[in-house]
Image (cartoon, rainbow, N blue to C red; front, top):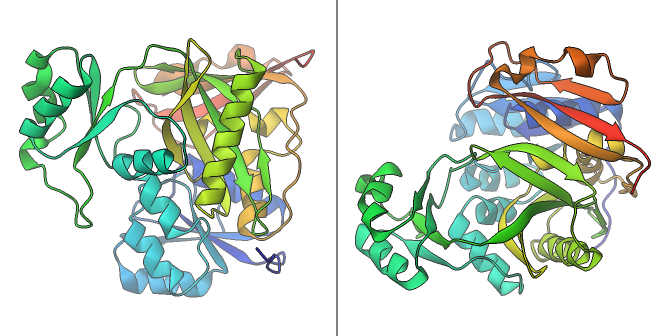
Length: 371
């Protein structure tokens, strides 16, 4: 792939989405001298507080999207639930990185798992589900326990229900909105049933891929979730080197096969035998990569700016051990010890109100010697 000419300082990066990932992406862009323009429906958002400009409109508003495209030099996104049709529309006006195809696959669990199968990366057993009858057949096939998930728009445990026995099927189907289930306009499934995996741990890998096809990987991180929300990410992950290499290789392969320019994060289950199973992917910065902001030569946001603007990627070598701690809800009110510790790096997202389950910030706690 031929390298394109890098965007010059002063160019504008258009960012779809106004959350904390967009905020940190805008801050990273400013370090390289770029302007940023946020496009999202919500006027009260963390990203627009630090961006150069903002447009508040629905993602289906083609007039607003066309004006947005005319005001920027490249388009990217900070979360994968932007409609793929929005990215496809914008591609007619401006370069979008990553492309709408990567977005389309990553935002649909059935398409995502099919993609992993096509590139030879294992996943837990799964079945596409569009009716309660199909769900009963899938449970009979896969067995219990299992997890029912909406194919789209679910995150942090939303749109999910655990099925411990066939007696749970009706309630699980109802809880994810099965009464109104229908296939998506493009023929995609309404939901997927995933078989339970008795895993040793969960890890994630983030890779950056440039316009020239070069790939740089961050160290895999070991993740712990509480109430379906990421609690901590620790590096180095406590898994064998061979397993680490499998995860890095699979993630790089996925980014290449998607012809992705930007970032790709993939979450994996690590089995007790040391094998990996892909859980889900996101073509954007990832919560489990926030540790890179203080423990690496370059972080995930800087690397994404480099990729989408056509700059060369650099080696994101890690120079410390680190645990990233998410600040959820009232956690943000208990920062005294970390604020007084030079090895604790506190990042707050500018959200005025702390609510249960709301991500308010994170802390990167560094330690040495590096292992």
